[in-house]
Image (cartoon, rainbow, N blue to C red; front, side, top):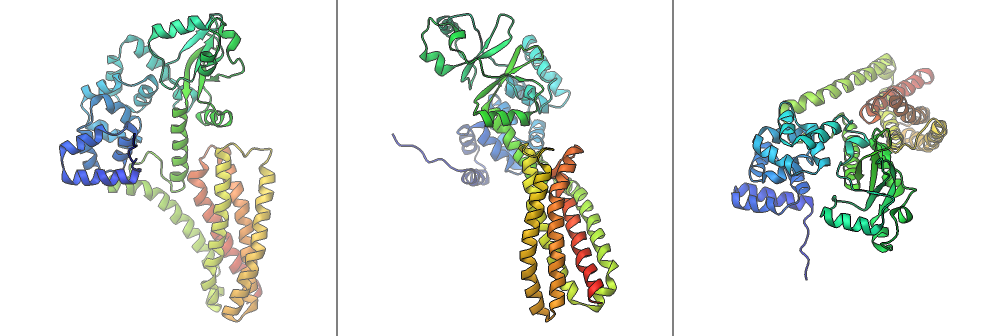
Length: 451
């Protein structure tokens, strides 16, 4: 039996673009029906709104819900505007509870109320309760499709129960063990369940050391648990210890992707929910805020340069060499900033090790500063036939690299303590520090020693 070659995302997108150019409804429909929901979501995010509409028009209602929970919020909002209300209701009816909750989180009113009214009294109560949990907590991640068994029954009884039930929730790797009051006791791995004597009780073969997490645990901490303990699923419990849901590895992968997108987009002052093909004016307004902030910091650096106007007029070479100091400081600071932001995201930076990290990074800045200051001293001295000018350039670079390392640690740590996302604001503040310190150090030393 031969296997079919699997297209990567770029190849798939190229094929979709060619089919859309031909405007063949039959080919578009056949293509869409051959894709998984997540693949279709990726394609939709990569197309312009007019092309999305062509794809969306041939997607069956029973698949729409799975696609809507995969696309980012802005793209999803655009798709909702062109979705028939009845089709959306049908899409919700075919979703699992965790995906249903994800979709309900993004539905606008009055559509949200209309959908909830159509899903039945029992499901309505469950989903309304789940919507009370913050999206970025264990409660917001969990699925309510849980399979629990009592600790005091035999494995044979469990087997008969599963056969009578007919199916188990997708992604089940273990059964959740509870007592008579639905209190969490542990888990029964399916591997242990199938390989044990059916006459044994669940309590005899269950894993009583496994944990259940409280519904309010932040999703970032949940991800860390999955990573550190190599988990495939994790029970979620209420304040009283009763099992209320479970989190599976596919939910965690989504969180990891969102965190990575957030960090990357945050560096540019954007969010991961932005549509790549949003209208020009919409994108321009969003970016204008950070361009404005950057402009203010640039004026601050220009003001520092203006303070030394007389010095620059007398020694024109200073204007040529100034960007070197600021550029080297900016790169060194960005390296430290990225390292610390990653450490904060992985919870590797705490009050107990911040000072040691600061000392280490300043030492790295000092070591690199000494090495590269010697290099630029020699280069500038030969270039302008002035060893003193080269020495001042090297000294300024040394000062700026040390300050850049200092700022690269303190800025994200301080922002994190203030509840401000370091990925969003850290880069702008760091650039301001390295530019101002670099220009001040170089031009200040030149004023003191060359005039």
